[in-house]
Length: 132
Length: 127
Image 1 (cartoon, rainbow over the protein chains, first blue to last red):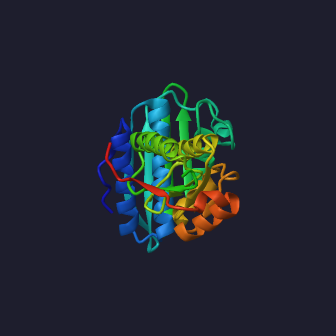
Image 2: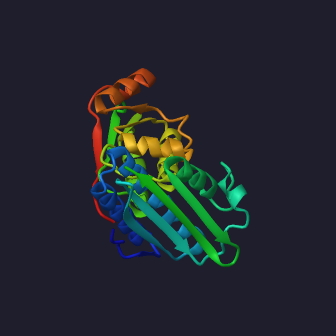
Image 3: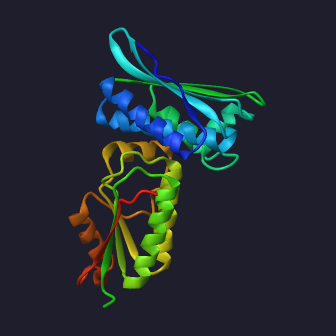
């Protein structure tokens, strides 16, 4: 499956474009209406985190297929300050500046697969998958 | 007369500009009409993340501080599922499934708010 071009996230307008693209990719992958909205919301949360903590980053959306099952993968990456303690950041109500704690743990709850990699000073990469 | 209700509707994608304009319009109208109730029709909103939600929630608190009871209505299933799973604090929100029910909820809460002619406010402008 061809990946769409990464969307550079640097302001609210580019974030809105990523959310719209997430909706389009999720619809074409055959996700349910509820799942489409969840994927769009997650994309928005991940983009917000980029804007809030790294100022600039990218979101890549990809329609994928595994064992005949369709899905969508979202990868949000940045070269921002990174997360000092990923475990703590994942805990509900933990946040160093806004809604990160809630956002990340909630994102994990909504998606079928969730991976976060972060190195302080180097950046953060969050990958999520929602299956049909 | 002061016995009225404002119906405010957001029908476009949320951005902080849209939400700020919406808040300003809503609070200005609330005062101008001396409205005692406000219904926020969010049926046209596809995606709401935590930041958008917090923004709307503070607008509702502001409306309440101006003496109006507020009810949100028309939230879509995917949006509701997302907000709850994200951990949004929805406990103090009054909600209804559609406009008609929203009027009923408002009437139960503040009978005076649903009498007489109300006003409406549609936020379909682009920033």
